[in-house]
Image (cartoon, rainbow over all chains, first blue to last red; front, side, top):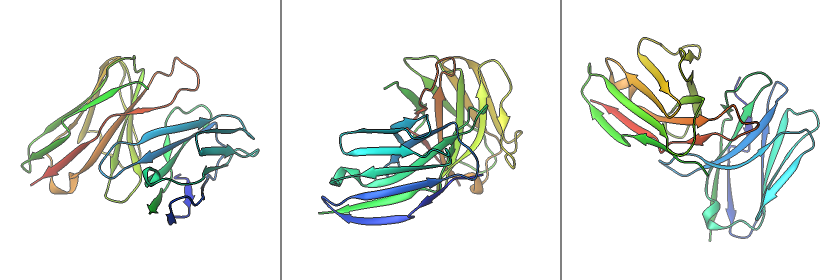
Length: 110
Length: 117
């Protein structure tokens, strides 16, 4: 079952913040976050493994909640280069395949 | 990060012909490769999972006789779209992981845009 992301789309001005949520109906082993530009392959952002884990680099961070069925991606002081579609990829226990969420299209305007 | 090379990046073929797409891990060994299909403005839908040296596992609704997957070595997997039809036109992306390593990310190829005319 495909994880649900919210919002579906968001438009921000440069410098604003955004939060993207990923929700699964099943307990997860890990959550991966990717960004995809139009016509290109997804680019890996980060992986979260433990409930309660928070991770980040530069101005992009993420959390993985204790019940391990939800994750959020935080983008602070957004830059034009952050534009693209963000996908969470979820992995369940005992199953190595990544199932991607519905996607969130982020547009940053000057 | 590791490099996964997918070829060709674009292909146009006639209806009824077959097309082969290659996915190579250039600087690591991929025990497992995944093939995805993506429609415009949609998410990546997993088609199949292939493990080196064994048969691919297809997702529900994916025709195994139409989408032939071979993973003969730890660095190469191929997807062959047989008897292609216009409805097979799509963006196909592979990803690769070495699952002998704990908690590793998936590395993606550049994708192949297939157009069947």
